[in-house]
Image 1: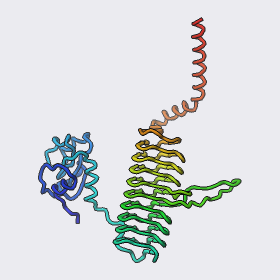
Image 2 (image 1 turned 30 degrees about the vertical axis):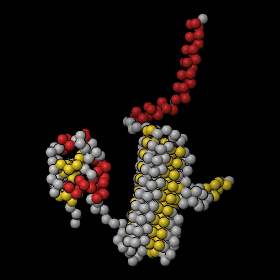
Image 3 (image 1 turned 90 degrees about the vertical axis):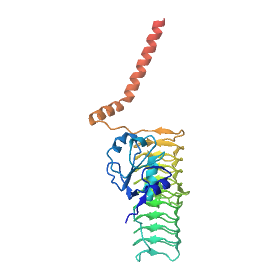
Image 4 (image 1 turned 180 degrees about the vertical axis):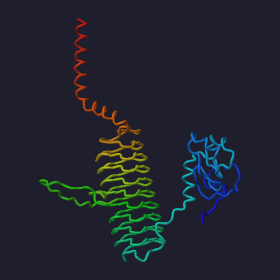
Length: 347
């Protein structure tokens, strides 16, 4: 059964100013359009202010500039969206990835499990692995030899953690994530591929979240490093020896090629590709579908993907693009002719 909270309790938890009935009971969170009397909603964007007139929410989280537009119970706070995120954590009803240690789990006698560790059905924990307190390991997970997982980290079903990978505390891994698989390292001898063993590992800091089916390759000689407070979306490919700085966010289907270094507090849009051995400085925003072929040394917003257009317009644009070299040659010829005519006029 969902636990009820009073508005006074929620206001204290968020550090918000309460206006209205502090004894009002709240069950969970909903949108302004869908909220019922026992739910709390939030207004993070003033362009939706009109919905305040029709909402049936028991209370609304909003900023001081929007407070006068709502006559009901309200929690006033500087950043309603951050308040929503924190409140969603408090009211979260997501189940555990596992409960207790399932009888079908295979755990090596040389593995070390902390207090209150949960291991789901058919999970495997190999020799020398060290699992911290309150870790949840979902069904079908694989934890390789001598891997380390910090306290309160949660692995949903079928997460694979290869040998010697190190994961910090309070991390979250969605189903199908693969951590520590081989990097794409090969030499070519007369047309035959010679595999290069990947002997580095992956080191992940604290409070890192990794999306479903995201792959993080182990380093070739040195390590692949994901610093703390990084969030990675679904289906991202991070190649060997990449380093992702503190507080960076990367959206889905992005590819970071080998030895890329991403600074702190960067935001990388979905379906971006960054060529290998490039370095991105702190505070860079790269919009979706960008192709980054060289390093970025100044903070700012960078883009390269073409916005969508009708097929007819796109075909014209591509035709012009193919003729750029011809246009350039003709422009140079015109500039030369213009200069010659100017010289003639002077004489």
